[in-house]
Length: 165
Image (tube, rainbow, N blue to C red; front, side):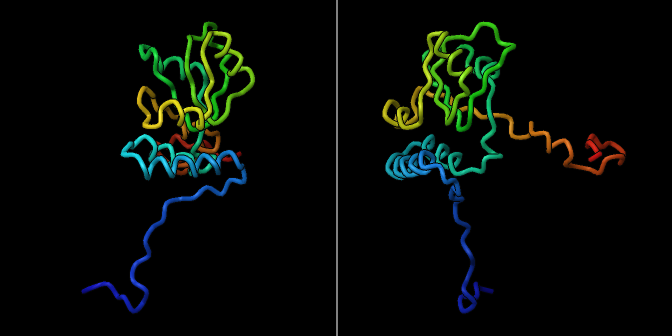
């Protein structure tokens, strides 16, 4: 059997487009859409895909986790499609070059105080258009408080799901 063209054929799945009203994010999507099309770099395609993700799927990354993941990667730029937050448990912040959508005030201050730099994605596109010398990082998506309530029903054997009380 073939595809029923008369009935309209098959619906092709389209890539998700951001619904954000933020003009900065919309311009970044345009920029990385262009870079993804005009370069052979998979990095730009991944950045475009992550920029178009929902806010839930752009979780924050703490400075402590960032420092831990960047150990032994001197001279590379950490790229986070999401916010970077400060961590008071980290006493000595290493010198880092970080590119993120957003930095909390204290995280930015900590990075700059350590002699590092905070980049935006448009600056990153100028500095490294193909993503060379970068480390692509991601925050924990399943760390939301709501995730505790998903899964097997609470009370069922081998369930670690928290009940809604």
